Image 1: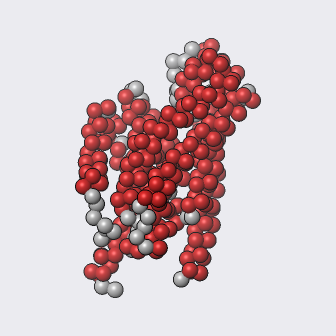
Image 2: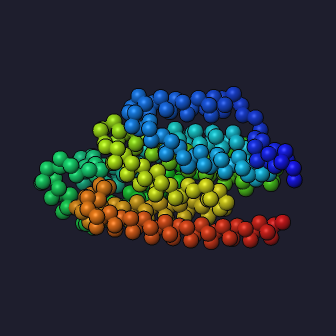
Image 3: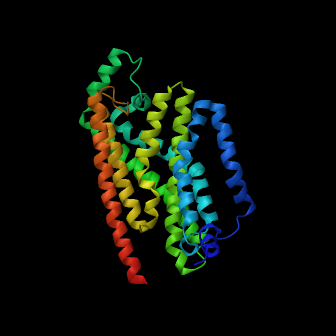
Length: 314
C-alpha cells in the first residue's frame, strides 16, 4: 500500500463537520482555558493533564482505518452533551436520590451530614466533630450508605446518563453501513465516558484551586480522579461489546470508590479524606492496585474474545 493510501486511511475524516459542530470543536477548548484562568491560574496549568485522555482517544480514532471509525460528529456531540447537560442531570439526580436515602437515617440532619461527608480534609475540624466522625464511620448505617452511594447512586446514575446519548445517536443518526454499526455505538460510548469524566475532573480541580488548595493537593486529586478513576473509560473499551462494557464499569468503578471510602473510614472519616500517614496511603494504593489489576485481566479477556469473534465473522 502506498504512503498516500495509508495517509488517506488514517487522516481523512468520515464526513465534514457541520457549522455548529465545528464551533464546538474549535471554540470549546479556548473557552474552557479562559474559564479556568478566570477561576485560578493553577487550575488552567493542569488542563493539559485533564485533557490528556481525550487527546489520546482522538489520536487513536484518527489512526484507525476509515471503515473502523464511527462518524466523528455524533461522537463529538455525545462528548459535548454528556459533559454539559449529562453532568448537570447527574449532579441533580444523584443529590436527590442521595438525600432521600440518607434522610431515612439522619432526618432533618441529612444536609448537615452530607456537607460534612463532602469535606476532603480534616484540617481545622474541631475535636468533637472528629470524635463524631470516628463514632459514625464504621456503624452499619454508614456502611449501607456507602454501598448505596458508590454502587447505586454514583455508578448506576452516571452510567445510565452516559448511555442516553448513545441510544439517541443510534436511533436518530444510524451508521451509513452495517460495517460501521458496531464501531458507531462503541466509540460513542467512549466519547460519553470521556466527556463526563473530563468535566468532572475539571470541576473538581477548579473547585479545589478556588478554595486555595496547594499544588500538591491539586496534583494528588488529579491523579486520584483523572487517572485512577478513569479506568472505566479507557480507550481500549471501544472494542468491547456495549452490553459487556456498561456492567463492568459499574462494578469496577463502584468497588474502587467503596474501597477508598472504606480506607478513609479506617481513619475515622465519613467521606473521602486523603490518607494522613504512610500506612493509610499504602492500604489505599493497595486497594487501587487490586481493582486495577482485576480490570486489566477483564479487558484482556474481553479483547481476546472480541478478536476471536472478528476472525469468525471474516
